[in-house]
Length: 120
Image (cartoon, rainbow, N blue to C red; front, side, top):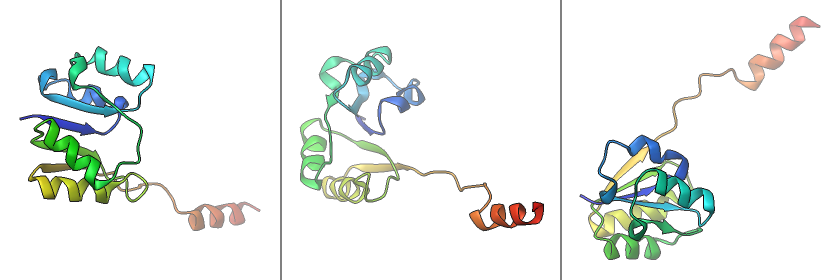
């Protein structure tokens, strides 16, 4: 099926195993964004060079216009328009694939401050 990639141009290499003709990357309208799509072999007719934020209506229109079967997005929360993407995918019957951030394995601020106090 056709895949709308709402993950950004930097993530395109992760999808190299897929047929580029199936990919519809939504990237910023910059030379870097377009160049990343070209390097991945994505046909120009599939490149969606746009700057958000995107409403659920615009997301739904893109899903419909390009006959999208899957939408891949990062879990970007409100700032990344996650709810609008999820609602549009549900409304259009498109399978939503969410890339979640790994759990933070770092130290908390309190732990770091405690260690600093111990050194003084």
